[in-house]
Length: 224
Ligand SMILES: [Zn+2]
Image (cartoon, rainbow, N blue to C red; front, side, top):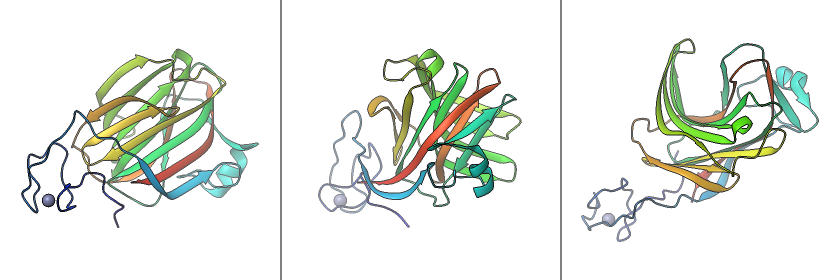
């Protein structure tokens, strides 16, 4: 299953790759700007933590962690917790809304997550409200030892809301183009073709535990 494709030949409508010189179907020459605008379309899946189960968690675990209209993710040890929707995709937009209750929490979205045995790979964004900063990385490894390739170094941004305020972190993926948005503002765009397909979801971590984050919603959309 595949959603509508942003990267199309303007002549024949065939799918194409970012920065391809010619259409692979009709051979029309293609022109590209520095980037493409990736626009979210129809909803694929949504978890509203006032009533739904947090992706990757059981209904019981979600119910036990529910605080009002959010789900609390608590850290007693340094680790990354993550969960994904069941539907895999190539091109999609994932957005995660939540609140970091202390200056140690990182809230993130992940894209094209693949797990083979203990090995996992994905694109992951972080926002760290404690220092009003964000990063985008490519993760390859096991839960014990991950190789992290930084695609966008940690950067301070006024778009990241502070500790205690609601933040929305969003990854929009079309072909090899990845857009990172924080609270609706695009803060980074990278081109990376390493991981092409997988699951989309949320992640959270703590710089120095203990730490608590509240996840309010996770939303997956097609691109238009
Ligand atoms: Zn064409």
